[in-house]
Length: 112
Image 1: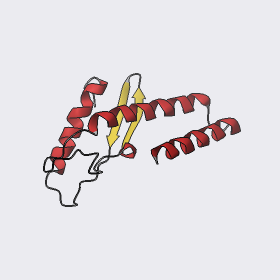
Image 2: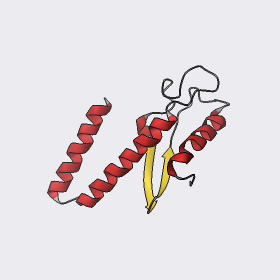
Image 3: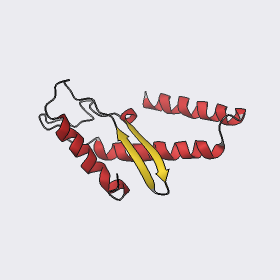
Image 4: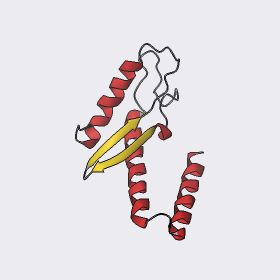
């Protein structure tokens, strides 16, 4: 499914480039941000759930789509991670959020 979404995203980007609606540098910036989001996802997906023996990825608490990276300046990024606890009233959601924050910090120099 992720491969299909990537192909659709690439196709739409190419169509917009050829139509002149999107600058090539914008497309390169978008691709760079998508790659950085995948870097973050690769780090956070292996975090274990505090109550279960599974990872957050295995429980669908985090997915590739839940990570967004925005460039704020040169080598400065805003990382947005949206996660879905396994139950709405999860008492450990703040612990999971803390783990996500701690795990992604080393990727970008500890700045947030």
